[in-house]
Length: 312
Image 1: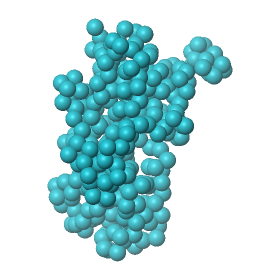
Image 2 (image 1 turned 60 degrees about the horizontal axis):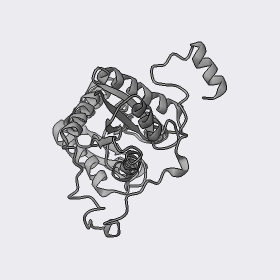
Image 3 (image 1 turned 120 degrees about the horizontal axis):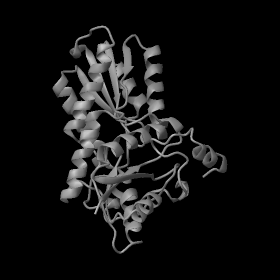
């Protein structure tokens, strides 16, 4: 029996971010279509929901689904919201099994892709020695110190491996230091160039804010501040998903429970140990109906135009 893959997106207020996510869905569908039924859903802002996507697969006879989070680091979305949604959906059918894969996290593929994005940016600029260059890695930022530490670990590996004069980590929200605070600190160090690499898949509200901060700092500084492109749908990201899918199939898609604030007493987060797993996106969840536009769908067909007119 054919198995299914559910690509678990977060959702965005930005149309271009949603379209970028759907482009990834199209690529992964083509990559896995011979062996899997591939569908997708969102936690918030957009539709279809995970529930709608799972129901579509179930109606096609799929009884085993591997859920792959399109998420880089394991904050509350990967540890609470997505598992809560999937556990709830699985109870709707006695003969349905949903196995959740691991987030991308600290991955050799992600590290290699970060190197690739940095080198692409350097190639567009006048030559400056790496020892005269500062690297700022920007993560999304969460209230989970375990997730934030993964960003910091990758920062350290890039610093050591590429020979930058200095490297530090900033976050687009929630965690400290913010992007602006990181850039203000770096400014005092007097490097000739600072490269900012955002650890994001696609464009969106947060990425736009990061780029705006870097641009403003560059206008005010005597040093040079530049940023890289996001990770997008590079083949290295696709290989990372291949790895996470295989782990889910083999039953070894384990989270880092040793430093999980919900399982252990972690300094500063002692009150979170044993907290109930529950989603928090109910007020901004997408609707259950069919999405406006399927990935890879031709919008110029008569059927697509009628659906658009009817809002279905």
